[in-house]
Every structure is written in C-alpha cells, then in structure tokens.
Length: 170
Image 1 (tube, one colour):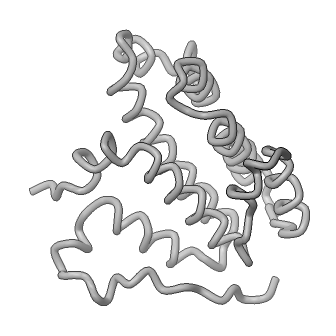
Image 2 (spheres, rainbow, N blue to C red):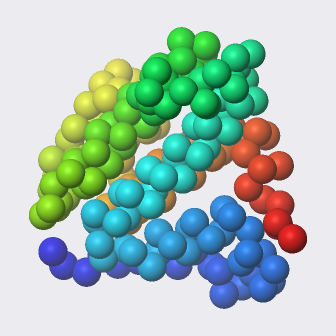
C-alpha cells in the first residue's frame, strides 16, 4: 500500500498544554498510525466508543444500566438507542455502524487491509439520496477517512463532548 499523503493536524502550532488535552492526543495518535490501517481503525473506533458512551451518559435516563451491562448493551445497541432517540441521524448511525464493522474486521483478521475504492463505494452508498452529496466521502486515504468520521461525529455533539474531552486532567 503506498504511503498516504498526510495533512498535518497543526499540533506544532498549539501551546504545549493543548497537546495534553485528550482530543488532540487522539488526533496525534491517529496521525502516528496513519500507515497502519489495522491500528488506525482500532484507535478511531476506540475513541468513537468513548464518545458514544459520553452521549449515552448525557442523554439516557438509564445511562448507568446501559453503561454497566456491556453484555446486554454492546456498542451496536448503544448506537441503536441513540438513533432511536433521534440523537444520531440516519446517516451518522449508518456511518458509525459501518466503522464498528470495520473495527471488528481489524480486530479479528490477522492481515487486515483496506481497499479504498470499495470503502468509498460502500460508505457513499449509506446515503444515496441528494443529502448524500454533502456526506460523500472525499478522503483520499484511510487516515483521512478515519479523521473525517471522527471529526464529523465530534462536531455533531461538541456541546456534550467539549466539557469532557477538552479539559486537562491535572
């Protein structure tokens, strides 16, 4: 697989204390693993799981029950709950479920690889109507695909995520 042309995330221009914030550390970890699609999707999905759990905790009356019973409420069920509550729109639900399936492949296939034309086709098929034009995957590589999905999910719910992931622990 040819090396992907990376777009810098600009961490060199941030004050050193910003680099300790969880959000920027995740972006840096993604950039560090840009050449390894298996680790890239696992890191991306791991943070998405934290974000989904944050939404569950913020939006569900029975959040403790959902969070404490991973057998009854796996990640796929949490996505479904958020979708049924109207917190995740149709496209975002499908996109996050698609990422979940990619993560499962990466975790269970010893020689996980990405076929970008196939990924682009499958991802763009998640929203085939006119609104899909605004969500169409323009990423040139898997690194951009992961960052694209993570950032869009963040932007959708930043009012919930910022207080949790933009504060330094210390």
